[in-house]
Image (cartoon, rainbow, N blue to C red; front, side, top):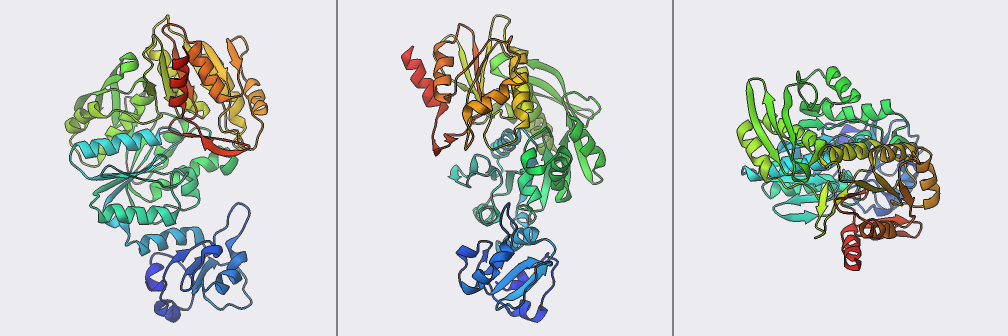
Length: 487
């Protein structure tokens, strides 16, 4: 493809004649993988700057280089193109290379601290139920026509994975694609080459502050999604999303579990215990009943946002609400594990203070008076340390018994992480510390009492554990089954 065509939509400085004549075979932002005929895009990483490797890229045969305007070059063999935003240029170039997928199907982006995976799953399932061909991309991978595609470990894949995948789905007939959009991907401009039909947000609560620095920058990163969206749908139930909704100038709609003045409201809410929730969805003079098999307030909020997005896409409210009953939920999100015993085990991805509080409050809303809530959780190593004591406080306030354990300790010592969790923990709450997550799960199952609701929080869909020795297989379902056999 001609470099000129690749750079469509990118603001740049360079020799227009050569740019128009230069044929490019591939886009690459890793100098070690450059092949003859490639364009090398210089991206700044956490520790390294791609501009430092221009000479290496040239030696490997780079035909052109896209770099920041501040990069000084004494001499260059390759054609040099300079731009103020190389990260944005990389994504736009990949979108152009792949034929601009967002012009060929409707793409819905879902961001927010918690709930992205569930909301994208609900929207995707309902679109498929009502006969639309819809793909899904996010934490759990890529899915279309019953086929799974690995996208790596990131919620929103890098440009070189994301845009070819969207092209493939479009070529295979997808009419819609629903994707999780992380704050990292927005900050790093990974989705800059996408025009979203709708951008939706679940909530904004403290998370990833080790990357963003503070809540204001985290908030602003999330808000970037709406500058690329034709329409915004906001779940306006927390301070930041309410503020975000007020700032939005374009076409927008709000939904709320708490505010009856929002465009879409949940009314006459009834929690049906472990069996789900039902409520009336109101929009103006219209109202329809929703019955969902997913339990708790968190599920209610996710269903409400998903329904609002689908209605804003133009689908009939009655059809959307009827289809909600057939959505079975998401792996690792309030997922029930069959025990065959007189107690329940639920696996959930709750790994932030807000998510943990919402899960526990949801369970408290439907548990019977005689039922104990037994919470097992830990906090990740090499990540935001400020949330550890907060999660300790939340777990001890909202649980009847707590098992504090590990959760991807990475290079940190597990005992040190637990010590930080305990700084906020109310020791009057019955609890036990067990460093090994495997042993902690076995303890939870073997010591469960009649009626207990055992919550395994933090891992969710993950089938691995990361410790000082690296990443290794770890299935909570298998460990629960092992513990049940021992009973």
